[in-house]
Amino acid sequence: MKEFELIDDIVGAFGHGDAPWLRVGPGDDAAVLQVPEGFELASSIDSFLAGVHFPTGAAPELIAYRSLMAGLSDLAAMGADPAWALVALNLPSPDRDCAAAIAKGLGEAARDAGVEIAGGNLASGSLALTVSVHGWAPAGTLLLRSGARPGDAVCVSGPLGGAAHALATVNLAASVPGCLSDAERSYWRPQPPFVLAARLRGRASSCIDVSDGLLQDLGHLCRASGVGASLNGASIPLAPDAGLGHALGGSDDYALCFTTRDAGLRRDFAVIGEITGAQGLVLDGKPAKGSGFSHF
Image 1 (spheres, rainbow, N blue to C red):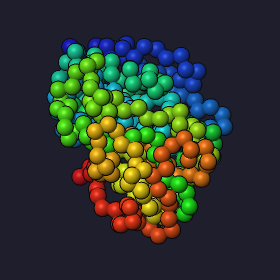
Image 2: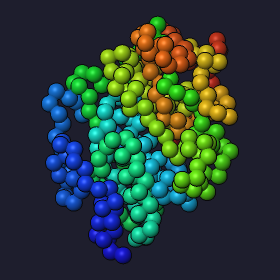
Image 3: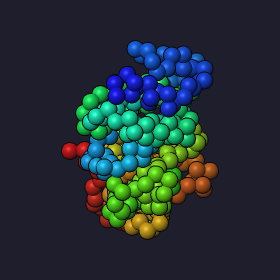
Image 4: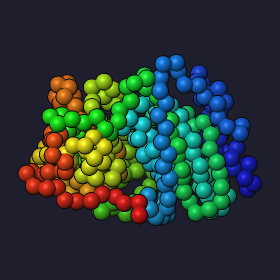
């Protein structure tokens, strides 16, 4: 199959979006979009490589869905409403079935997240996806890592450790789309809390997504804010069958960890600790030890 026929197949699987801000989508040299007046744009980019970010030999549909949702999680962490994505795909060969499965997974994730696939690129090489995501929020309301202050509550948006438990116990390369167990779903079908992200604007003082492990990611937030945090291990919500170690040092949850003094947020979400003036992380009264995912 020729390259441009393959591109036509992939683009055709996405359908044609009718978002008013998407003036030119796939098919031209560049996408043309318009940010709504009074809003600021947030953008992020991630690469997902076989054998590093997903198991070699896994179903292409699952790889694609997970990759787009994982990329979009960065927008949720910023409190941005997801709007569009650009996707660069490397394929070892012009495999029509593989391309169709990847397009299906990307399209489903895009529909679930309410984003448009505005364009991308196709190249020959080891299987990999690079996802560039873009979204917006009213000017001045985007969340940063640097706003936490002593006395703020440390909260998480949902149970942690499910994906790390799946990585440790399940042969994820053999997962079958449409027949996923709860453990497989926690890894292959992350659901960044976009509705919560919008609610956090103006109510949370800082935010980060838990993609590399709670301790590592909360540590990034604390360093950016020049603070520390004291955590209560018993308060950390765990996914079914996951242990505290999976939550603290495991990766791929794509939940949100945020700091706040808002009474409503403290009531509705798990409060797992408090921001302190002394730098460093403390767990149950002792210095917290642990690591998360490392890219090198």
